[in-house]
Length: 115
Length: 115
Image (cartoon, rainbow over all chains, first blue to last red):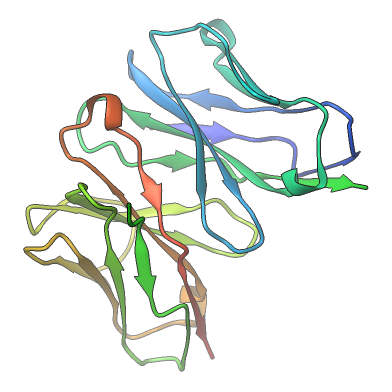
């Protein structure tokens, strides 16, 4: 069975601080996808990134960066120079590569960025 | 490019009633999944439809059923509503074939309240 753990329930930072959201996963699959989604107060899940398990290269997109470490089963997400607009709930998710590919989500981390 | 759309936005029902939620997938997508998100939790996979058939099902009772139409749109039906069915219901779509486009995109959700 697959499992995603986001141990940080809520994080509060002041604008311009850097913040890292942790994600640890469990799966018996040898290949899998990892995702991060953002859920603003409106409720819609916004796709941020997809990572294949065979590609451990870290990725940077503007102020966002992702650190994938297969050895520790972690896929952490860092926001550099946070902004108030980053305030949202962030979800880490996992799916198989073959098969039906249903997403298994973590419980989410609520990020509050104070001005 | 039209994204995933859902209707209605909000719905209030009483225990024992039945409800139907609707979803239109993103343009070019043929696979639709439904997720239930209880307050303060991550989304939970209900089921997935492709070619008008249920392809995968999560741990939800038979009171939850669905349908997919030839135009790829989908409905989620819940019978004999319980208070615990109150949640945000999210629809997601993706192309069945996967590959580089294998990412689920979510709609804005339908918030169901059962009184």
